[in-house]
Image (tube, rainbow, N blue to C red):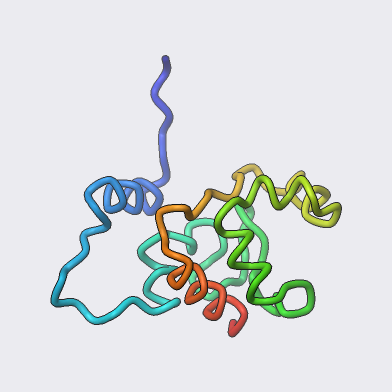
Length: 119
């Protein structure tokens, strides 16, 4: 099997996740913004959610999403896409498929959802 080259931010995020996310028990509680950074969402969606050639803009998501929908989407993005015609059409524009965030708790996925809905 041929190794796959990963972009540095994505490689860093995957390394952190593989090592337990680098969690510090004395660290401040997670926020949506910190989870966005730690999970390298910015690698595809931009630091401010403006989007890139790898992933769509996250600005003004409230036009199409509720918090509950985003929490569900983050758990199983590809399953969600299969049920949503708008997302199926959108995925053809971006080379990177959205990763699942099963490693986050429901509460943490909610924090991410709140963060991106606030962009």
